Image 1 (tube, rainbow, N blue to C red):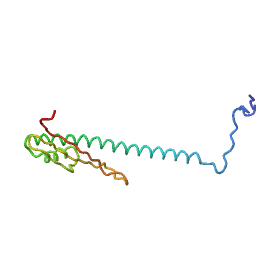
Image 2 (image 1 turned 30 degrees about the horizontal axis):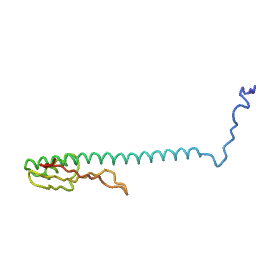
Image 3 (image 1 turned 90 degrees about the vertical axis):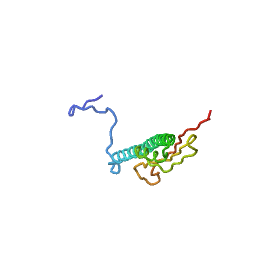
Image 4 (image 1 turned 90 degrees about the horizontal axis):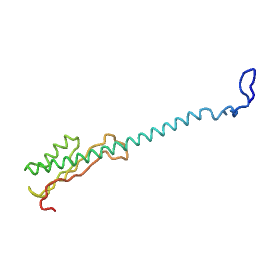
Length: 141
């Protein structure tokens, strides 16, 4: 290792760096911006996927609750679909279909519910839907 006495710097250590060529100036900035944009895009797509997954899960849970409340109303002699719509409104879903099959003793309540996702992007569904069944069936082993 040689030390230049005038500047007190080490001479001959490490690699020499060449001055940047005229066409290479700012390439690092462009690369950094491209990487940041790619990361933001991946994060946005991930957030969108999580939003759909969370909405789908809550809609399925709300559909089960709506069907069970409709079945309970039917068992008590009330209108199952009216009760289903009331409970659906409390759970921020809308009933798109309600059907009661059977009689007062053996019956099944089928409800179709949906909720909008909130974001409207081209090519993606506007909302999430779910179907649930509940009822009382006697004589089933």
